[in-house]
Length: 506
Image (spheres, rainbow, N blue to C red):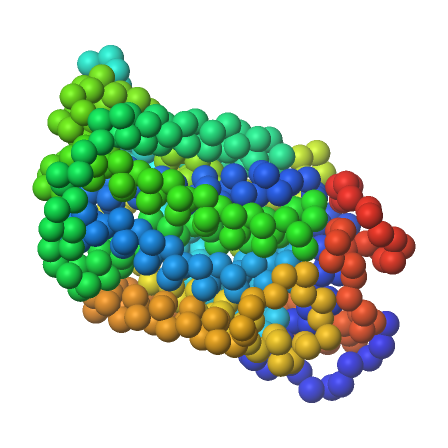
């Protein structure tokens, strides 16, 4: 332990990557390394395939016509550039926090706080809004399968004419308890749900192919290229979720190999399913039929293939799909919040890991209760638009982070490297900026207000209590200049041993 210089770190102080990795091995603050590559990939698929494919395909078809198929491909390409950057940073910095942690290691504390604060809102509002949608889809399933539904008073929030959204509260609290129980158990449940919803989509694709016709493909692109790109901007948000995989970096058994595979693999899997589903839907129903329905896939089977009983299966698939999204997105939020607490920018007592379950149980319960209240009572129709701008802002910083870290830490092990850097990360930034420029002014105003609140909290609390600044005051510097092996969890001993797998008992 050596004494650092007397100069106090400023607001743009950068966390050394070595210290971030070493911090994960400290007693009571390291998460259990128990998530496999398959489970991580399922987390990505679980976060991406939700209401998007069950609903947004109708909106896209109304804008682009049959060319909505190309819109799905274009949206996937737009996400792919940022996915590559996430893959490089996640494999190089296997620490909880996702874009927040990567920004702390590249652009400095104040920028990291801004993106962390942004992600807290993005994930929290997203979970609450998705939980509300879960309640609506549950009612649709009960009606389609059994001819019953919950009364509006307990099935809708005050914004929608109800009193208390009980289904939304139920699903949030159930997911909270599962996340407290352990990441391994959560990943296993998510894997089952992913299998169910992919099976439902396979059912839809198979039925569509057996009843396929080419009549609806004539006048393929009625609105031309503009229609394809406009629909892609709508569909883009059906792909958001792969970034949640990176929040599991610290709990991956082999982050160097598993994280790039999971991030890129989940995006590829979802793109294949999205495109096949879009082709099948156009093959049995017209764009007008898809656009006019709140449940376009069920409508396609009912009106196009004459299979009315399939509505119940599609409704069940939507319920399972949304449950999986709630699980993965809420998991991501707890890990980002955990990383910020461990760094001292938020109260460190919430960064304590429960020794029995290996999870930040106290933090998870607290966030679960807040999100349940949000989902039950708070109007979400306007603030949910912040999810879009928050995600795109994170994409920009992650792409920039790859470029900066290549210059400032060229010696750092990079198990996965973005090809043709900095060209591809720059393209990722341009895609995100383009999509952000299309967002309404009201969304930008809310975003700025939320960031202003966050900056006030940072200067009143985070700056004073930052672990980086406390360590400096105590004369603690970063660990010796050597990086731990990326093929296994950051070890406290035998760093050169090869072939070690298995979990970290911390």
